[in-house]
Image (cartoon, rainbow, N blue to C red; front, top):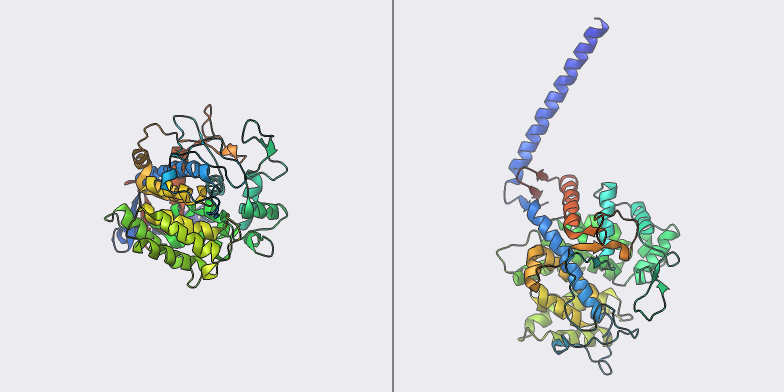
Length: 461
């Protein structure tokens, strides 16, 4: 047989193989669609609706972050000389934080809004989550490596020496500010020395491993893995372990699970019922006999047994006495930035807020300690659950800004909003996240992206 004849035979064989493969692939796709159309085995999620929910996440989180910042560290558990805030303080003058200053954006304890095309400033409650989404986009991966996380931090956060000058108040002397604190600051220093996660959160290397930091930076992984908390936890593992260990680690996992569950909670429930169900499901991630598990059970019981659901202060005061003063359940309070005391405060606002984003943020702002962090967490989650339009309606605002100024605190990101203030917009951030979730659904969930009907088919397991 001549060369051309052999080539033709090989060509026919190759065509046959490709045809068989195409038929098998088509059959596999048909089987997958058939499998995912079974309600008992698969969850169908609208990509279009999810995009609006992600917009609501960023908007709700920003409102809550900047509202909570007004009272951050004002009340850190010395009620004899500095009584805790109560509902009566809402609308009144903000008192100085423990370092002796207030905040430049508001001197009144009230909701804070940014309007029109003025950008929301990034802060540590939103900027590292933004960075993680970007790193997934940049590397086109569904699972970041330790090296990618290290290089991402070194590229997009400042050190203490190369940070720009920052002036908080007009009369203040400018100081270098890299907007990293506590465990995040320690982890960044370690990464600059060549350490990789999870070594950056090991107690022998980082004595701040019990601080709140990982909570602020990783909730988004629950939203990047809709309805699949197992996948969300895998994606979040190294990011959480960048700065957290033990109870701080488990508490951060709790928040990630809450965010993932928001996509499969029974919508026949009202928001209060949805939140309580999600919280009880996420409670399962907390190891039995852990301080965080004891905290959850105590605060949930206090809420349920309180006949006056407006009297959230009762449970908050119990938290102060039980954990900060009496060191119950193995908790030894040392610092108002700790994950433990702020987890307790966040649960007070979650339970008594009962799914109402306005009331939840209000309680979180007044509850004390590191008040911008729990508010940002629940503002983002509830903002996701009700979507961008729901957030605007809840706060009775029609022209809230969707622009975002990531370079306020971080660096080296693309400018997605050329000729406008800030570098990005919530709608653009949400749209890019949808494309990332497409990868997660296919690669990590073995589900199906139905572009014709604009939905995800997500297997339950």
